[in-house]
Amino acid sequence: MIPVLVCTLAIFLLSAMDAGMKSLVIAAGVYNIVLWRSVLASIASAAGWATKSRARPSFKALQLHALRAVIVGIVLITFFWGLARLPMAEAIGLSFIAPLFALFLAAVLLGERIRLQAVWAAVLGFAGVAVIVAGQFGGASYSEETLLGTLSILVSTIFYGFNLILTRKQAQIAKPIEIMFFQNLALLIIMGAAAPWLGMWLPQQYWLPLVGVTVLSLTGQYLMSWSYARAEAQYLISTEYTAFIWAIGLGWWFFGESVSWETLAGASLIIVSCWIAARASMRPVEG
Image (cartoon, rainbow, N blue to C red; front, side, top):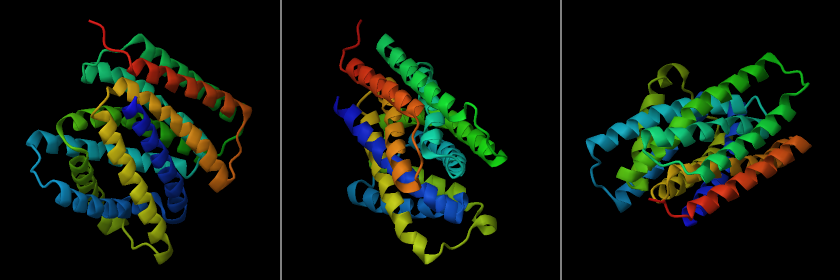
């Protein structure tokens, strides 16, 4: 139960980071915000890695860090670009397709045994998302930019589902501090390749909020890696659904985004799905 609770806390911190990133991306653009956040994250995680462990990672681990950095880069750019054009609750609701996709990837790529309770939890959580999305899109008129934002979020979910599986594989062969440092370093190298053409120095007023979202991101990454090292992905994946609960509150508080009855009904289904997954995670594997 402890990894489930820790992973839920990680999701909350990352949701708060999403809210901060949405404001920054609207103000300064997605590329430069992600680029400079990668710079700060690399510096901070390098200090932690040098303090706690300077052991050289294996070649297999480095390959995995680099692969996940590419996936994370795609996820960040497409998700935050879409998030700047959609309400938080709507964007997070769309992103829940990823955990459902990742649940079955866990069986294929990790060889995990999918228990019936985990399947029902994922289905119920997805039903909650369906209710929310139906309420958001039903009978509404959307601009071209909003539709492109929706498409961008959907692209990010495809890659994020794969990212969840890579998180589990990383956690099995590397410590959280190593994952944080080498993944952020690889992401910085990838993002920095376009800096001569797209990069710009941020105005002074953006740096303090950027430090804040970086701290939230690193803390969330660390706690998530810690959790995935101690529990199977099929149970922790359902904790992703709690991000919608945080999105409701953060979107309302910071951006004045309203919440419909469909949103509340869907959120209730999501909470139940997480409870089912948490209960299932406490049962031993049969056979």
